[in-house]
Image (cartoon, rainbow over all chains, first blue to last red; front, side, top):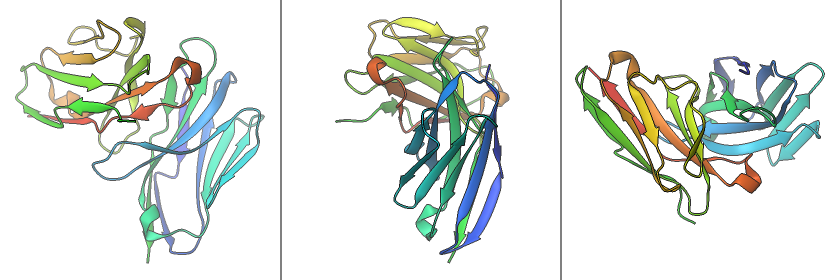
Length: 113
Length: 114
């Protein structure tokens, strides 16, 4: 099945700076890439996603970039706030075969006030 | 609309005991997923259903785990003889077939096997 690598596993940034999380995938059939935020004791919540027909998507302070040729996608959080501190997971899904979601191992983001 | 609900929220077992987890998906969602999320890791798919049919259970340890969704609505995931390595959060998620991309997670069941 698909393999999704996510880096870094731990990220600490100062409030107001940007945070970047990078993911890579192997299956060229993957065409949907969601990002989830998970706070302690809570379920993962979808925060932004991108499909393979796009290279960039922005929702407020969240920016996702997709490089299909390199099979990489990334999440950038601009002007980070303490409330952005959480686990972040990337995922990839193909539109062929079982069409499963494959998740990265997660990034623990801490925004330091 | 009401979200995905799961019960129980927590379970503590001794090795060898059995446990069942229950999931009620969002109304109208015909696709239901069960994930295992070990501590500090991403969710890993165990099994998923479209209506009552199993679509993929290749990652489900079939010797001890089973999952059913008999009426295509609620689902139960059962562990027959729990092992310490089963300690994890078990997440249920659902989505609409016409919009398979967006899946919504329930609160999860946190299992500790002693």
